[in-house]
Image 1 (tube, one colour):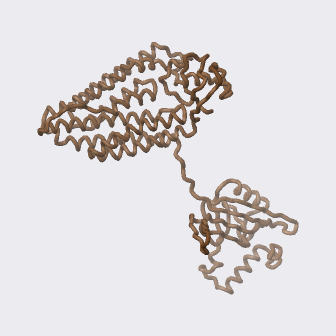
Image 2 (image 1 turned 90 degrees about the vertical axis):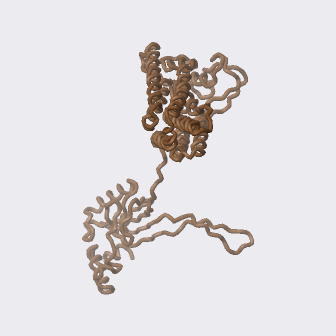
Image 3 (image 1 turned 30 degrees about the vertical axis):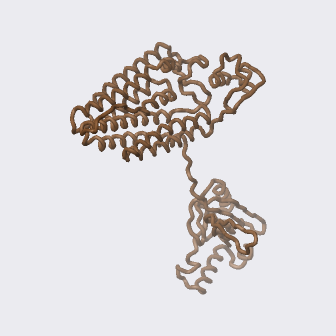
Length: 477
C-alpha cells in the first residue's frame, strides 16, 4: 500500500494513528503486551520518523567447505553476522504522532545525523540500539506526496574497535614493568637472605664486597674513553660522523644541546654527573652494610644505576654500559660449612638484586631509545631480550618467583615497545654502485635529497665522505 493510499484511507497521519489504534483494540485489546502496544517511536540520532516496514538480517557468518566425492559439506562458523536493519518509512509535516515541525527541516536534520557517524537507533520492535551506522539513506520527494517525504535507511550495528597500542602506551607499560621489577627483586632478596643474615658480620661483609665489585663495573663504564668523547657529542653544529654517541634517531643525527652551549659547559655537566655516580656508590655501600633493610638497598642500587645512565650522552650508550652491569656474576668461593653456605647465599642474593636494578634502569633507557631503522629495532630487541632471558632463567632456578614474573612482564613490554618504535621505520638494504661516489651524489641518487648525505656518512662510516664504498647498507627510503 502506498503512502498516498494510507493518507486517503485515514485522512491524515493522525488519522492513521487513530485508525491503527482502533483496529488494534478490536483485534487484540488495549494490552501493553500486545504487538501494537509494544511498538516504539522510531528515530535515528534523535530525529524521529514514521515506519511502514522493516527487514532485518541476522545469523552467523560461515565458511562452506566442499570435498571431492562427498555429498555433504562442512560448515565452519566464523561468528555472528553484523545486525543489518533496512527500514522503510516517511517524514510528514507537523505529525500528530511524533511532531517534527516542517518536513524540510526534518529532512535536513536527518541528513545531518546520517552523515555524522554512528548514532543511536530506536527500532520499532528491537528498541534502542547504540552505536549504529547508517550505510545508506534515501529521501524521495514528489508533488504526489506533497508534505510527505518517503525515506529508506540501511543501518548496521557497529562493533567496538580494538584499540591498538600507541608508542606512548607501550612506553608507559615498559616503565611500569621496570618499576615492578625493583619491587619483586627486593621481596626475593628478603626471602633469600632472612636466615643467612643471622649468621653474623662475615655474611654482611660478603654483601658489601659484592656491591663494591658491581660498583667497579660502573666505574669502568664511566671512565671509558668512548663515553668521554661522547660527552660532548651533543654539541650544536655539524661535526660529521665523529660524534655519534647521542640518540641516533631515524635520521641518524644526534640530539643537539641548546644553541649556545659550549664544549666547556658540556664537560662541566659531565663532571657533575660523574660526581653523582661517586656519591651514589657510597650510598650503595652504606646500604649494603645494612642488608636487613632490603628496600633501602634496592633504592640505593637503582639510584646508582640511574646516576650511571645519566652520565651517558644518550640511551644507546646507557644500554651498552648497563648491559655489563646486568651480566654481573661474582666469583667468590666458599666452604660448605654453615657460615660458608650463608655467605654464598648472601653473594647470590645481593648480586641478583644488583643485576635486576641495572636491568630495570636499562629498560628505562630502552623506553627513550629511538631506533635508526627497522633493522636497528630488531637488533636491539635481540640484544635486550638475550640479557633478560638469561636473568629469567637465573630467577627461575633460584626460585625467585616475584622477580621471575616481573622479568617476564618486562621482557614482553620491551618487545612491544621496540616493535612499536620500529614498525614504521625504513629497513636497511644493500646499495651497490659501479664505483666510489661522493656522499652528496649518493644521497641525491638514493633519496632524491642531498641533505641526507650526513646520514649516509654516519651509517656507512667511510674513510672519507668523497669516497664512499661501492657497496654498503643504508636505509631503503
